[in-house]
Amino acid sequence: MKVRLITIPFSHYCEKARWALERCNIPYEEDGHLPLFHYLANRRAGAKRTVPVVVDGVHLITDSTDIIAWADAKKPGTLIPTGDARAEALALEDELDRDLGPATRRWGYFYLLPQKQLDHVITRGVPRWEAVALKVTRPIAVAMLKRGLKIDAAGAERSRAKIEEVFARIAERLADGRRYLMGARFTVADLTFAALASPVLLPREHPFGLPPPEEFPVAAQDQIAAWRASPAGRFGLRIYAEHRTP
Ligand SMILES: N[C@@H](CCC(=O)N[C@@H](CS)C(=O)NCC(=O)O)C(=O)O
Image (tube, rainbow, N blue to C red; front, side):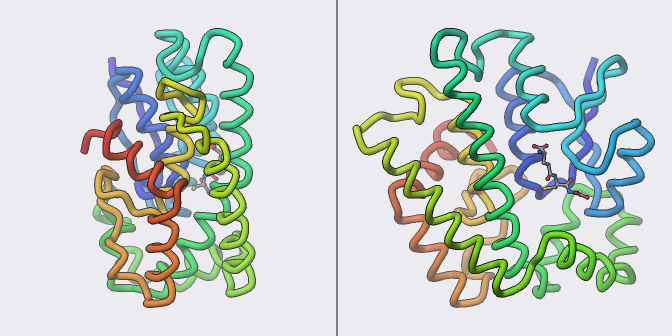
């Protein structure tokens, strides 16, 4: 039986959960919604505010980290190391969830929200009525997102600095030539870094087809190019190319 994955399709935390379900061979049906519209689906399922949410008829799993733990438990070791490295891999996942996720989201939204012509990205995979309703609700939704997530020039700059800091930490970890963050094998840490960096690296293999850098304002394009060329950026793009089938 397929589980239901409630998402905001372009959300990077949702991409993290989706990728994990696929990697753990768990059949799922995606129930995608626009931001704010997702509250209705969450409420019906008995979940709180955020997506991703997994509903399997018995369990309700309401956080991407818990979804990965649940998925991995079905075939232990698929993503989360079973031995000594377990605690370190999970700590790295938590650190990226806390530091990288909010920063890439704010920076990406800051440049994406003013671009109405990119709404086709935001509305991909959501019910048609929501996409139609967006034409009316867009100003309210944008105002709520801006206020809720502190999306303004100062916030974008703070997030840019935070992304630099995390990318530097990742580069330091990779400096000994290891292929993956935990060593020789792809784990939850690599998946989390690549998924949460996707709003600023824009990997081609992202299943929802993120907009190419050329669609961003020039100032953002230069920054995206610099991140893509950095050691952590090259690593994130390689993880997508080698471990994410479109
Ligand atoms: N810690 C959560 C974070 C998820 C999260 O922040 N989801 C965002 C979408 S990117 C959300 O649902 N925001 C809606 C809200 O907070 O109202 C996880 O890992 O699942």
